[in-house]
Length: 411
Image (cartoon, rainbow, N blue to C red; front, side):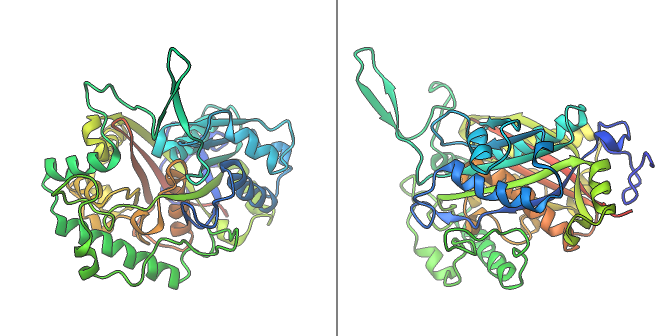
C-alpha cells in the first residue's frame, strides 16, 4: 500500500505515511438542530446522542464490539459521563466505553480530534466521536455556601474576574468595538447566512447528513422571511447602544452530531468489501489541529489564533485557506467578521451552506456539526481543492482549528 495518499500525493500528517495509523472520517450524522424549548424539550442530552449512535452503528458494517470508544463533547450537562450513558442507551455492548469532553463550544470538535489522535497513536482503529447539547434540559446549577445555602448561577466561570469573564454576548460587543465591526456588516453577514442555509436546504445539501427525529426533519433556525429591513429593527441585545442583536446572533439550540472515525486501512477495506454506502467513497483524512488561548474579553476570535498556529506548525502558506472549504461556528456575526479580517479572508467564503446564525448553536455539538458539514460537502464534490478546515472559538478565550483533506476511499 502506498505511503502517499493517492489524491493529495502527500503522506498523511503525523502518521509517517502508515495507513494503519492515518485517521479518516467515513460517515457522519446529525439531528436537525432544534430551538431550545422546542421539539427536543423532553429529551436529555444522552437520549439525543443515543439516536445518532444507533443509526451510525446500524449503518457501519462492523460488529458493535469493534468500536474502541465513544467520545462526546458536552457543555451544559450535569456532569457524569454523557458519552457512556449515551452508548449504553443506544444499545452498544457494555464492553464499549465512553468519554465525555468539555471544552465548551469546542467540545464536539475536540472529541473528533481526540479520536483522530488516538488512531494516530495506534490506540485503536474505530471510534464514534462528536458532541451533543440539550439546553432545554440542562440542570440548574448552584454554588453551596458555607452555611449550606445555594447560590444559583446561569453559567460556569471561565476566567478570573480580575482578568475579565464576560458573557458571550458582551464579549461579542467587545470584539465588534475592538476590531471596528459595524452593525451593518454584522446584519449583512447574518442575512447572508440565512439565505445560504435556505438555498442549501432547498437544494438537498443537508439530506445525507440529517437524521429526522421527534417530528423534525429540517433545521428549525433558517428564516426565509428575514429581510434587511427586519434585521435593522432588532435592538441591541447585550450592551445599551451596542451593535450585537438577536438578529446577528445565533439562537439557543438543542442537537447532536457524531462521526465514525477509523484508520485509512480499515476504511478502504470496508469500501473494497462493498459494505459501505456509496457516499462514503470519499472521506475526510485528518492532517493536523491546533488549540490556542487568547484574551477572554475577546473570546470570539480565538479561532483565528488557533488557525494561525496550525498553519505555522504545518508549514502551510496562507494561500491554502483561500482555496479551501472552511466551516467556522457562527455564534455571533461580529466574531466571524473579526476572525476573517485577522486571517485576511473573505468571510463570504466561510460556511458554504450557512452557519450557526441560521442553523443554530447547540454548544457541545457545534464543533461536530462543522465536521459533519465538511464531510457532506466533499462527498458531493464541493470545494476547489482537497483541503478542508473546521474552526471554533470558545468560552474563556480559546480557539480550536482542525485540518482535513478529502480522500478517495475506493482504490
